[in-house]
Length: 369
Image 1 (tube, rainbow, N blue to C red):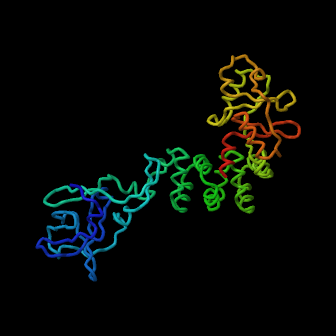
Image 2: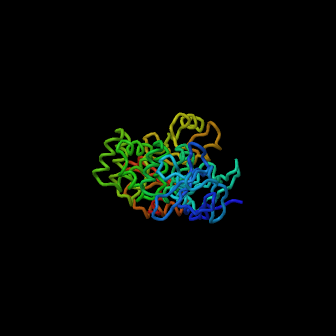
Image 3: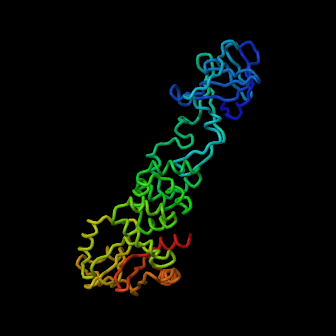
């Protein structure tokens, strides 16, 4: 019959002669020897120095009571050992990451299974590898396997130090995706404490508008330091976005968008797309340019895929033709998205040239701020 760890804490312990020797104050696992076996029992004796009973010295275990197969003189005085895992201190009531359930849970108790062997009783933890689950002692590969929104949700329940450790351990692309999902306040706290070079590498992996939003929340000094660490082209794109009021179309747009000539055929566009580093998970609209490189319309990717190979992009344009200048306020953006059920809206300059695109994700993020 299994015993809960909390039922064993405080258990009265008696030696082989029936002499009372102390109460269980803690018990330990020695992972190097056996990863799920209770190896030592710490016995408290009031004002006297605690004793330690080893796993092979235990004759029987019951709720509230332990009997030993040796006398008190065979027990050793307790000496701390860093190689031991303390079940109550290190495992009970600790936050752990459950990578299968994609959540943070708290260990409130542990099942201990009695196993009789060679005349004594050993207790085994039902969790086969506690070292792997305690706090954040899981592999970085496990974390990177989680979807960024799931990992971001997990991190919101952790301490600042634990969040910092996770982001520092992830590759830059994964870290960027996770930060994009986190609350702005938490993201700012994390980036401010990162090594500037690491933070700049993460910013490079972000969409320019997301990077600009993040830098806009940092102090001017920190923002400039990170921009200085970034490659010139990426830094210039972000600087341009930082010049726009966040509550305008220019402040909401992303300068990283797909555009092609309106005279191109469907097959030519697909061939071009295959050679580009595009985020296909978010790409659902392509911007069209006329012969003067001015904005002339948009084509949905679904419409593109269903068209004939020789069909011109100009024949696939969506109606009506919609765009906004960079200084348009966010209310105008919201009204167009709502009225026409848009997935993307093009932002143009004074010469009617496309300079960015606002996606429905950008709108949602803006509304949630």
